[in-house]
Image (cartoon, rainbow, N blue to C red; front, top):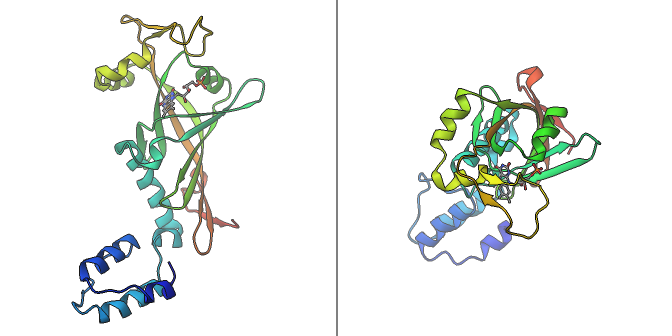
Length: 237
Ligand SMILES: Cc1cc2nc3c(=O)[nH]c(=O)nc-3n(C[C@H](O)[C@H](O)[C@H](O)COP(=O)(O)O)c2cc1C
């Protein structure tokens, strides 16, 4: 919305004005709402002139922090964009493969992300043969594309057991299906849950590089590398 468009908004109800500011992402409890709306209209225009709904994109450090807060939100919030990254790997015959996954854990300090898998899935063999992978997230509300280049590790033993113990009953069936994922079957529902089976596994992606592209009035792109302790480098978008 431009400042010109804002000028024509009839600001009679302060509550509407407050809502408008909130929608623009600039709402702050410190904004004083004038009951006549006049001062507010001026304030609104001034604010819009300097409108920056994504201030975190201005600095490398804040952008890096924001990326991790979005990833962590993806773990906690089913509706967050980062809940469902696209995972890309390369097959042994060097063909790219992509699929949707659910983000299950994120650790900013060590820069890793976890997903849960059926150990028999094709991606497992692919990532054992070639552990280099990319996770991709497009967060439309943040106008942000995040590409995470990573190395895949397979967790085993106690760590998997502890997490399996916390997997809700309703979700466990995903790891007990016969035949194995990707097997040809006679018809669409010719598979079954085998209660004794447990093919639950975890892939931990150790992030080496983050490539972030923010689409704003001026686009910004940054690269963050493990090798330089995530200091960050602006790139031409
Ligand atoms: C919304 C959604 C979430 C998914 N989450 C996962 C997941 O967390 N882990 C997983 O292995 N597969 C997940 N899948 C299934 C994969 O996209 C894929 O179809 C399956 O893992 C087989 O892939 P592969 O043959 O490349 O191993 C999900 C699919 C959808 C549509």
